[in-house]
Image 1 (cartoon, rainbow, N blue to C red):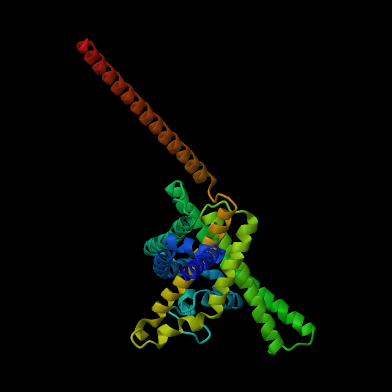
Image 2 (image 1 turned 180 degrees about the vertical axis):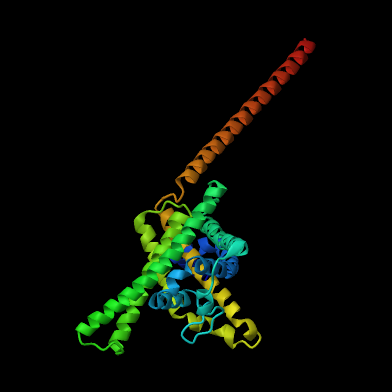
Length: 354
C-alpha cells in the first residue's frame, strides 16, 4: 500500500513537472511573476486618457487631409472604430466621439497650441509607460537614454503610428477599389456574398499587417530590445492574431458592460477600459512569449545589461572567494596562535615540574 502511494505521488510529481515545463505555462508564469496583470491594468487606465489626447491632437493638426477626402476619412473612421470599439460612433454603433466633431477640430491661437502640447504629452506618456512595462516583462531595467531623447523618440513613434493608421486607411480604400474592379472583370456583383467575404478578408489582412508592424515596432524600437528578426516577426504575428480575435469579437466582449444596469450611464467608458486592458494583456503576454523563447536559447534582449550583469556576478564571485580566503586565513592564524599559546603553557608546566 505504501509503495502504491509513493508511486502515485511520483506520477503526479512527474505530471506536474511536465506541465510546468511547457512553454505556454512558463510564459504565463513569467508574465505573472513580472506583475503583467497589474502592468496591463495601469496601461489601460492611462490609455483611456491618452487615446482621446492622441485623436484630438491628430485631427486638430492634420485633419485637413481627411476633411478633403470622403472615402479616406470613412476608411480611417472605420479602422479607428475597429481598433478601439466604443471610441467613434460609426455605422450605427455607439461611441463617445462623433466623426463630425473630429473633422471640425483646428489648432488656432495660443490656447489651442498649449492644449495640443499638453494632450500630446499625455499621449506620449503612454508610450513611455508601455516601454517600461515591456522591458519589465523581459526582466530589464528602464532604457538608459537621455530623457529629452526618449521623449523625442516617443514623439516620433507616436507620429509614425498615426501615419501608419492613415496609410492603412489609404490601403483599405485602394484595395477596395481594386477589388471592386477585379470582381467587375470577373462578373461578380459588388453586393454579392463572394464580394463581401473577399472584402472582409482583405480588410482583416490589412489589419493583421498593421498590428504586426505596430507590435514589432513596440518591442524592437520603442522598448530598445535586441530581438532576432525571425523571433520578432513570429512573436509580433502571434500577438497580432490575438488582437485580431479581440477586434472580431469586440462587440461580444464588451457587451456585458452595456447590459449591466448599474453601469449603463457610463457603459462606453467601462467598455473602453475593458478593451484596453485586454489589448495590453495580449501585448504583454506576447512580450513574455518572446522573452521566454529568447531565454531558452540564451539570447540577451539587451546585450549591455546582460554584460553588466555578468560583470556584477563575476565581481560578486570574486568578493565571496576573497572573503572565504580571508576567513580561512584568519582561522589558520587563530589556530596557530592558539597552538603557540598551548605550547608555551605546556612548556612552562614542564619546566616547573623539573
